Length: 375
Image (cartoon, rainbow, N blue to C red; front, side, top):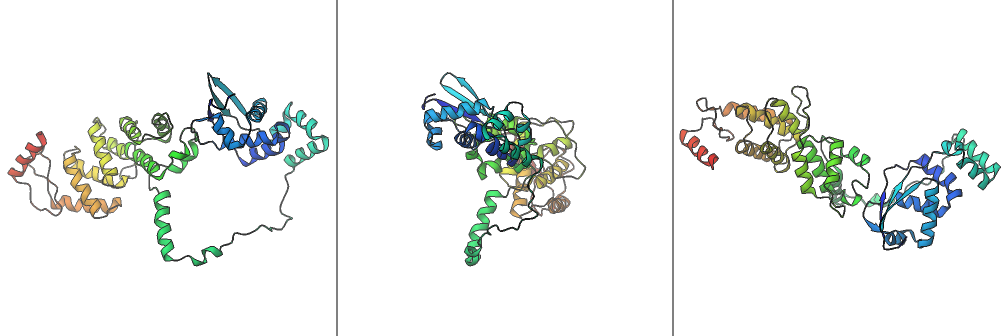
């Protein structure tokens, strides 16, 4: 191996506390403490492309020690090494839990030979009869909260908005589960910014993208340098056509595209329909449930068609009035629908939405709309 050669690390495994105990207590005497530290360092990799020299700089190992430690990790199947020309792929494997390690025909014997019979029996006893803390007194140090004694309203005013902007994502999409199940190789930590996470949740809410499907689209949206092309992700989400899924009548807390598909089961969803939904969620900042109420309202008023020139001013009005609850949105739009009846003589003409208007559009207004619409 050479310091200038490229190296990529694949870490699909989760290092649980039980496996960490096995790594430190059972593997370490056989592979060396240095190799265990290298394995833990590899587990923390952020998925970014790097050279072997970069890894040596972080681990403080020489190239010779790195090769010896990696060989030991290979021998005990903690890491498998793959080579292609002048680049390497290290695939991390999960350590055996302590019970499986001690029962292993080869590993158990090697450990007993290395640490001696008495120490080996103690290791086995710890697994069969784990230590109980019931007879002990808790003498742990407690966190000193005195630094917060000077906390005041001004500091709270700075802290709370920053925290909410970073972590609070009000979405139907379970972003926390998505992050737990997405490895750092698939979704690098450097790309898990609040802006990217909010965009991912928003696209899932709008275009009915499942957890598994989002992982696939996210992988296709990463550039060669492992940065996220958020515009490409949006295009892929818009191009994706999920299967229709039934939802309970009156349930507005579903992804917008799914709601529209259920309301128009015999109609094809067009790219133009998707652009309208996208603008309602991401430009007018309406929650998916409120968007679904608006879609239902627009389809009833406009003969089961979704017109941008109609929904845009309605969405702007909802946003201007701060309506974020579907029940309030439904009450508001029902009230406006009663005050603005649809012209009976012109079924194919888009009604003009004006809050509070009680009269029908004039023939001149209808002609003017046709001229603008045909352009």
